[in-house]
Amino acid sequence: MSWLRLLGAALLLGVLAVASPTARESSGTPAARAFFAEGEAEAKAGKYAGAAAAFRKAIEADPDFVEAHQRFIESTQRQEAPASRTPTVPRLQQLYERWAKQYPKRAAYQWALGFLSHEPDTADVFFKKALAIDPGFARAHVLLAKNADIRGDWTAQREHLKAAVDANPDEPRYVLKYAQALQEIDPAHFRELASEVLRKFPATQAAAEALYRLAEAASNPERRAYFERLRTEYPAGAYGYGSSAMYDFYDELTIPSEALSVARDMAKVFPSSKTWARRVALQQAMARAQALVAERNFGDALELLEKTERPSGAHGATWTLLKAEAAAAAGHSELAYAALVDSVAAMPDDRVEEALVKYGTAANKTRPQIDADVWRIRDAKAVPAVSFQLPASRGSAPVQLSDYRGRVVLLAFWFPG
Image 1: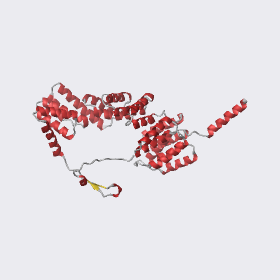
Image 2: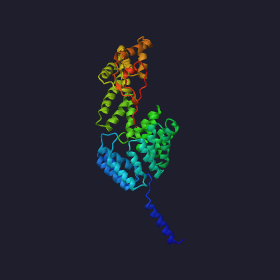
Image 3: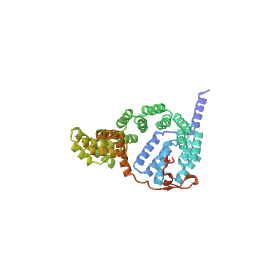
Image 4: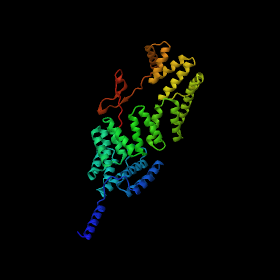
């Protein structure tokens, strides 16, 4: 074959490549990603019209940039229907229908029509059309998996998520979603995949979420180690799951000085937050009370705690234990016992119950007597539940609270996905 024929063949292949635009899911060309970053900045500032305009420029720069399509749709919906959980924007629907007709070989437009649909069955039709155009269009598999999860078809969910990972292994969010789908049936594989996200995609939002999911699934001391790592490597001001982790970490800390340290960090990240400012004040008071107890200034510790609002959760238990210790050491054993009984009656806690038995035994009370004291307070504070009537499903008679009096009832709450 002569060099002229070779050149002609090469040119023909080039023309064919240009004439047959790729339908593959894209992570964005450099130009598209620059516009995308502008859109995210606008969205973060609450400027949804500007965000939508920037995301549309990203789409024009790279029509297969699926994340730009999603953010364009979401920003437009936030702009035009901010109060709706299921926004419908006719011009978006019309735009994507026109694009899908104009570019029938681009899977992104079929995917977008599915994303615009609020009905899973309808959406699935478009996602499958996207996959018919491009079997490797991973985002279609991701949303098919989401809808399978809504239906309770977890086998299909896992199959679609695995297909998404196989099609686009460089998208850490897909790997993480697949890991979570495996958590109940294969915990070891879940940990392996979540750890893989940490190794391959460090310093990303997905890595922060992977570490958070590992912490969720772990127990102490491993759980605490994950939280400490999140605090150090994925600070709350820069990573959403780093922030979520610090809420959980704070709730679980039982030593006031440690809780105070986390609260101070979060108050710096969220300077306008009244919640974190209040938590700093509470933990400062509790840390000071603990120091006073250590110095044997029991009366001062008790006085400080009585002036301090009792916190909720595990910190409320710590507050009660400090108050009981200070009261008993100051010679007010009855006050110590009463504080513990009140706490257990309101919210059972292993640490407080152990202290209650200890102080009750010291007061010559038997375990049945201690339990009776707890139930006496519960009964005294109990009030009748507010009566209600709710429509029944499938045309049955309405149901009301009195129908279930004297019966054990499993109350379930379901929220559609």
